[in-house]
Image (cartoon, rainbow, N blue to C red; front, side):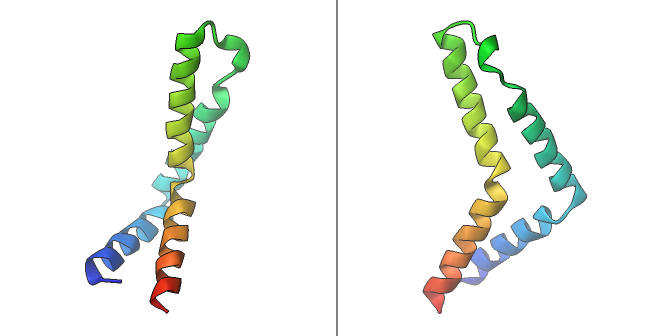
Length: 78
């Protein structure tokens, strides 16, 4: 792994341990959990909700995705 990529991962890992990141993820999970199927009125709103939930899910799972990618790179380099 080159030094620029290593620095990028170090920055992510530093961010993930902060209280601010933890609070941000809790807020995103709260928003994600507020969507209710009963509240969807039509197909247009359904598509919007699906898109919003998809984005929120990617944010919520960002830390694990970054850690998995890092582990894969480490394994490939070994």
